[in-house]
Image (tube, rainbow over all chains, first blue to last red):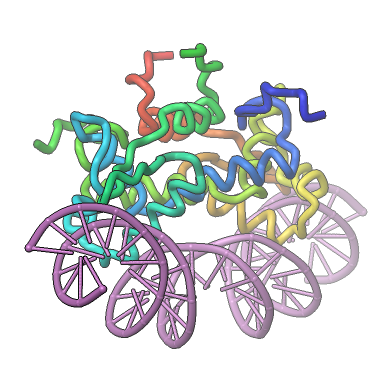
Amino acid sequence: MARRAQVCCPSVLDAPLSEKEAAKLAKGFAALADPARLRLLSLIAGQDEGEVCACELVEPLGRSQPTVSHHLKVLREAGLVEGERRGTWVWYRVVPDALADLRASLGGKARQRA
Amino acid sequence: MARRAQVCCPSVLDAPLSEKEAAKLAKGFAALADPARLRLLSLIAGQDEGEVCACELVEPLGRSQPTVSHHLKVLREAGLVEGERRGTWVWYRVVPDALADLRASLGGKARQRA
DNA sequence: TCAACATATTGACAGACGTCGATGGCCCTG
DNA sequence: CAGGGCCATCGACGTCTGTCAATATGTTGA
């Protein structure tokens, strides 16, 4: 059953979701269900270069450094962002496909492959 | 930079979200951040008639009637579904625009008119 | 008016979550 | 190798959330 690659994004509007599919989607949305994380996403996505140093996220977010680190971890584990260490700093960028999958599950037509 | 009236759905991928915008969006996604509610949505949306009697949701969801009622209330308050009383029963249907707004906030281009 | 049924609300409880201060691990620069 | 800056982890705390049993509210039909 591991071969069914197209499990990427069952739509909420189609056939009834199984408990398992629902749980997976719910995890994705849970990552978005916090103002701090949404603002982090928008801060990261809003950079012209497409990525930001984590150090530039603490102050605009108005939360402590450990809290920001915690939220970045949640976003990372949800696959919505990825971080890359470069020397002292860690640079974050969004993962467009992950957002697209969630978007598609909200009834959007299947996303064309990039 | 407060855009005009089309505050319907600021995108996570555009300008940094304000704490207020983020909080609003987060509430929407929080409503989707539970397997039971996602399955409720898919059960309601999956009906050919576009609506279902609440009594038909308890058994397929596999949770108690109060729990189902609770989740329906959350979905209602998030504007994702609406219920109409008809005699003894309450019929639920999804509110497509609400889902579309959330979808759009995930970077989808502005939704065309249906 | 009353009994029966569908739905909503209440109360209680365990577990998850957001937050912060303190601390630890890395990596760079003297 | 010592010091300092960046980032992650830990521990603790209060709050929020999902769940159910019990109960209340509301509607129908006798």
